[in-house]
Length: 117
Length: 111
Image (cartoon, rainbow over all chains, first blue to last red; front, side, top):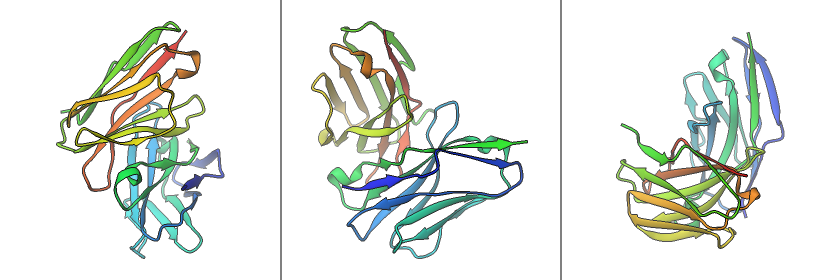
């Protein structure tokens, strides 16, 4: 079974600074998807960024980028120029490529990010 | 227009009661999901339907029963509610493609 581990229960960053959230995962599959979701206090689940394992290039979305290391099974999220609105719980998630039970998302336990003004 | 909606958003009830949470998506997706987020914020899949067929049924008590009357709806019925059922329940949907769209969540409190 796939597992996702986020080793940092909490992180803090100063406004305008850069922060990196860590995520490791375990899988026997060669192709899969990885995600970072953001959950602000409103509890809405918001997709931040997505990475396909078959793509070597790291995904970027504006101030958000990932460092995907397939061999190490590592998928970290870098937030540049942190803003107060980035404060939230961040979840790393894994999804298999094929259908059926692989459609589900397997989540890490989350990292609570605080942004200090 | 709301893509994935859930009703109610908040549900407070007594132990032993039966309750339902409804989910609707207007995205034309063929797969829908129920996730449970516990008090420690841990999110875990419960069920998934694809074209009204159950494809994922994780280890969930029999008191939980999903029902999908059509592709756009996936309801969750819970019998004999227990204190441990208190959580936030999220509905989500996706097409064969990857991205899952989440509803706003239903906070269930069992007293």
